[in-house]
Length: 173
Image (cartoon, rainbow, N blue to C red; front, top):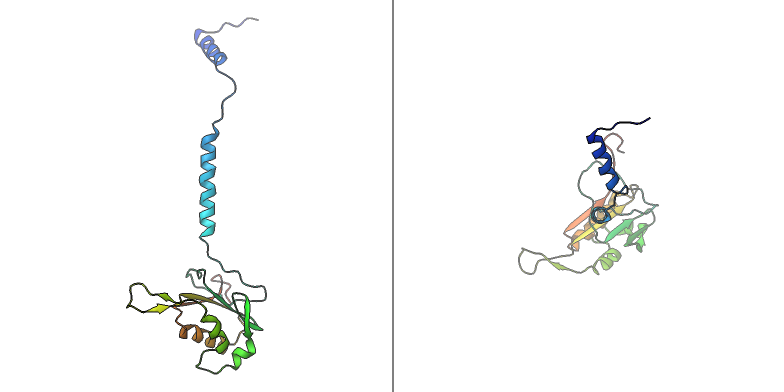
């Protein structure tokens, strides 16, 4: 059975016969795309500011949409102790026994180790210790938290952030 092909069909067959059947794959552009993707992922994951809270700490919840605190010294108030950067400074009972209206002496001594910085755009000689984060268990008495915050304020911390767990609008505690 012989098929008669038109001139056009013969030309198409000849053209396909001349072309190689394997298409070359250009990997350079694909590597460029993946490189950009890797850099994007690295930059975006590095910009997320999350503090890790210890397992024994249950943070109170909040509906606030403010940004989480940045990397700064962390004061942690657990049910047993007061810690700075994970190092125990005093027990919670000692903090509760400290007099009202005065800074807590042990906490003050540790926080004085944070260096003073010059305030930009302010009067000459204006100094601050920068930022500090306070992470407290939700069952800590407010009087103890108030004493810790007052101690931080007395030592010229410009921004004192209290860490909370973000709650949804429906299920907040």
